[in-house]
Length: 124
Image (cartoon, rainbow, N blue to C red; front, side, top):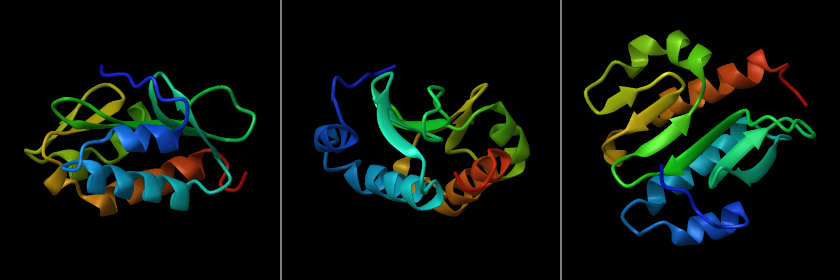
């Protein structure tokens, strides 16, 4: 895994190359919009989000060398397995890897984030 040494998510965003930046910006915007009230912080060298005061990372994303990764967790991947069963997506145990950023289905990303938020008590 490629880890950033950035201290803040804003600094992380400055490290993203111009070819990936629009996709990473869209990912961040969806996280912020759908997880409002959650803390945004850097964990394990990537932007991570979780309920305030909870030291456990809820979800995260990263700009990897060969893909954009969305760390959504096992439950989310199982819940959305049909929508994620497309050639440009590779899923691991708790990670969704988008090999071609142009083919990220941001509607599915948003649905996953809403589901994660609902499973974690909705409002903070």
